[in-house]
Length: 153
Image (tube, rainbow, N blue to C red):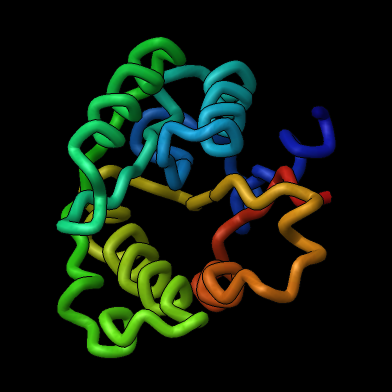
């Protein structure tokens, strides 16, 4: 896990802390929960915030479960409104729809949300198995936004 912690280093190399936090893209699933827990353990709860995209495409029960998981981990959960359902390419429901969903999500996370929450970097829970699959267009969006992938090594 030390490799994963090392991969969470902010691009500028400065340490995380209050006002310079790590945002973790968070669904409450196994990968994002493990990443959030790892980050809290490595940097402390004041240096980490979990980010969940809230929109018409997120079921209420999934949001409730994510809230519960974040509370169990001891990480702040920021609920960020996204609008992927307004994007025609997402609504077309093609195989690449995840690219458009992630693009909307990372646009929100890296924009006003990053400024408001003092985020120095954003990470998501792509794992080593995911990293070798070609059918994950959302991963392309993550790369385009410079999102860290510490579990993919």
